[in-house]
Length: 254
Image 1: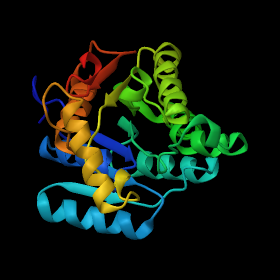
Image 2: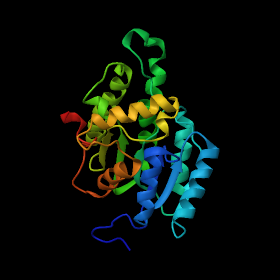
Image 3: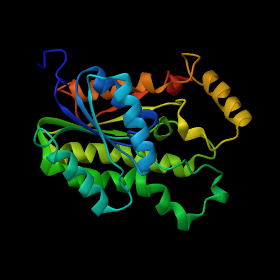
């Protein structure tokens, strides 16, 4: 039974981007609080592997997984309909952490005709997901999006990423007004060790993480478990909406 300080018991948590990284962490903490979890991402194999891993870690929990193409409105709508129709009616919480690899590089190298691709999953995908989910979100439900600390503290070579992350912050505020009294919030993590960085060769990636430590007051980089606590807070705090929760090790003060 849900309790005052664990209202997630038996609630349905739908996580787009839930097969890895921050979304997987959100799935873990949701299961740890006895929610019913649905994960989706573009790779059916990754979804199946992640769901199996979660079931092994939480044998008494309930995990459902299904692939979804975040670039296609019909695919997103079908995924949402599947979640809403499975088990208890509707959706209690929607978490969006889906995103393609980051588009990094100096402004002179930005291919403007490809900027739409940069926004497609991370921003336009939010429109597709929330539009489809809105009729199915239960009373007391919430939406939690995911951006990044670049929205508040840009770095050289991060122009396109900063544009995307800033757009998500603004979109969160607009959705909070549009969907009220349903709640909408966004997390802004700093540098977190996830598969997002796997496209960078090992040595430069290690150097990036070391420089990241120096850029945080904590002297560390983050991990999905750190950010998962933010998703939990966003889902369970009934008086929180339209807010950006920064989980960035004090990077904004360095």
